[in-house]
Length: 100
Image 1 (cartoon, rainbow, N blue to C red):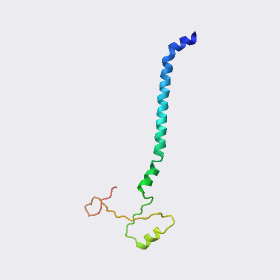
Image 2 (image 1 turned 90 degrees about the horizontal axis):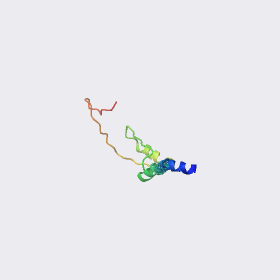
Image 3 (image 1 turned 120 degrees about the horizontal axis):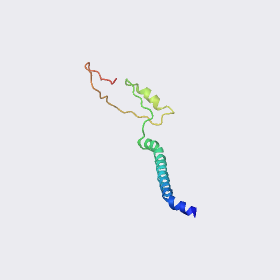
């Protein structure tokens, strides 16, 4: 009898506890699924974009023979050259204004 009366008076708290545990468990499962999915994001992006591991920016135009020697290194899988343009504000003396 006592069990029955205890259950009748306390069933609401049991239901609330079960709902709370269910919501918390769902949040944990969603976080784990998101973490598993984002774990491979960097690798997938690198595979698709062929991003550079190293970028060399010489101040002078190097000798083409030096670049050819770098291209032949065993560690170099792919080498490429690209041209860029420096876009910066000009100071009063006509030089690029570098941020300080």
